[in-house]
Image (cartoon, rainbow, N blue to C red; front, side, top):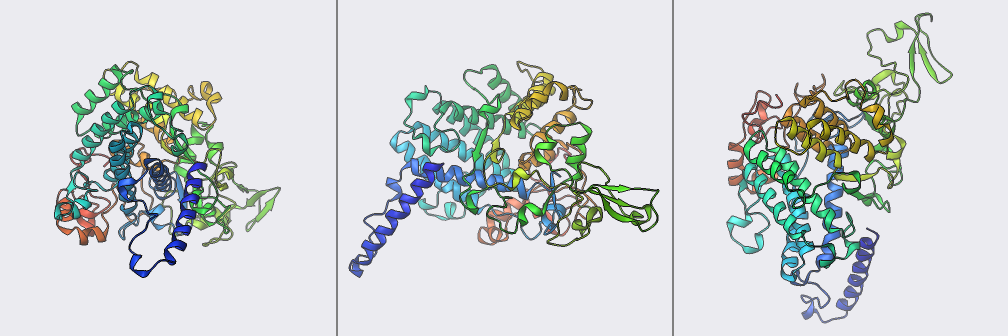
Length: 550
């Protein structure tokens, strides 16, 4: 990634020289840039880091911040409405950035085909599948087969139709098969600039594992609607491991490090470039996750969570009106907390999900408000204040996710080489390894509630825990299975969790005909209310007829 930024600096230097030369020319020549590079001459090695860095950063923002509140990993204590309470009716997210990455990726795909660069061609197919998969997961039906073709002209491509979700899912699985074939040659047979590949440093074998593991994600995604298709796809891949290698260990998972040179290339909650520390300070651990980690004696809690600065202790022996701090503990009498929900845990305290319209006041916070610091609630671990390094990585696909997908497939009775128990335990081990706690595996796996009990609920709970910082995948799994059985809090605008991102108003206006047809295929629910089909609580094809998650 260092080389990526060097490339950018060189490009800016060349642009500056070009400007100086241009400014000395006659005005009749202003429409000609002798130093410009046309799309026909674009270098895939210069496109590659831009696509990978942009997609990785955007996915991380979505997974670590925007959707963390939905699956109850985190809660915000200020500017919390969309995070805690699902107030998405005004439009929480646009797909413009994702299609922007896809346009660059399409150019890389075309150029790599023209130049016979199988590595770049394969990467372009994987990233195309990753981004289109994310778009349909979030919004539902979306432009796919006619997208990215505007240069061909005509209404069909300038205003592309919205493809059904099943078409998109099956399309990206097919593209991942093509990528697997392109990556099937020995590593030395590829023309690769390792420094341009900020995920794997040009390791073709790891890209091949990424492609096939991503296919497993989408086979399982559509298993409720296309059971036979998904079953046959996963069984075939696992029956031919040499032809379809997958991610099996933490060493192969798909990560992107952050440079930490400025606000735009750093971890989103960092206090290095956020002078006020607001992004870190406002984010608290959610009680749903904290309480479950504590109940399971989960060693990952210390990696993700900071202990409360000042615990609260209610003492019946104290006189009325007692409220004092003694030896780092806040001592209060029962009358002080009468009618108030107080968490007196001496180690970890999470904010309840959608607990109130004033979450900054939770647990007797002495200074509630937008800029308060609450010493009685757990913040994220101080590691998340840094700009880069350590655990601060965009996690596009984890080894634990792959193992839990296979555990669920085996639990369904599909013919796989190992048992559901074996894959489940591998998933737990892989997650612990990812977070530096593999040495705790032997004790943890025997804990009540962790020891395998052959239920989908348990598999999905451990997958939910392992998906910390990748809330996007946890949300998609919750919608598909109903696990874990998350409940909206009293301040949420609906009594159930949302199911999709609503289409943007500008898309509804500009591509009205196709957007309207897509909306007609969405199913309203009892929670859609005034937003009708375009509600966050309406069901796209993937959930229709499944009775999931509610």
